[in-house]
Image 1 (tube, rainbow, N blue to C red):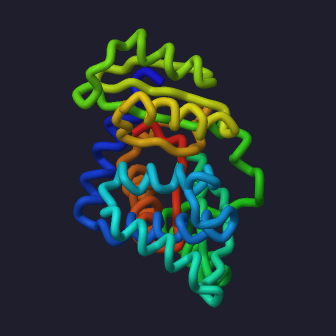
Image 2 (image 1 turned 30 degrees about the vertical axis):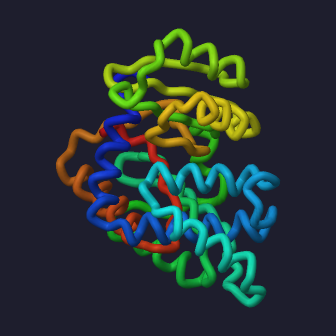
Length: 242
């Protein structure tokens, strides 16, 4: 992961999120609704909901907003049922892009995603066309400035809880897990009062693609910006070496 500091990307995302908290709160609100519908409203008995709550807190979502979202999902039998869809495609110069969506209108979302790819000179492909280029992992990033624990001690807590890998970057620590072990590792770190900058199931590229042409870079940014603006889009993964 050297040269691809997840922490730098997170700081960049958080700066954008601070200017548009409504977007990230909408994303997390939908994830809360889905988690409650799938496993109930009690976080003690719903590990998926616990993970979403941790994500909400990492993004500075107020506790009362989280509680309202849980109560609304639990109490409103007629609340919107969101459908999960994943789109895969190509950006400029063969860059691989995966788009996770959560929507109440699949036709609208499909049209918006295709439009984003088209406007950036890319195209949506078939299911599985690029996902084989990524590894699905649980990823936890810890800001060194926020963590007082010794690196070796931190590593042992993570590995003992089931983490696959622990690495130290210039300004952060990164913990990787198998998706099924993510909750246990995240909760072990939470129990040890480790502040987490980000904790999520993500798609990590196996290889990276460089874009050297200014026009290609503009097109790629166009795709990512349009996807970022769409409330139905939950997450975007790509292998562009920024």
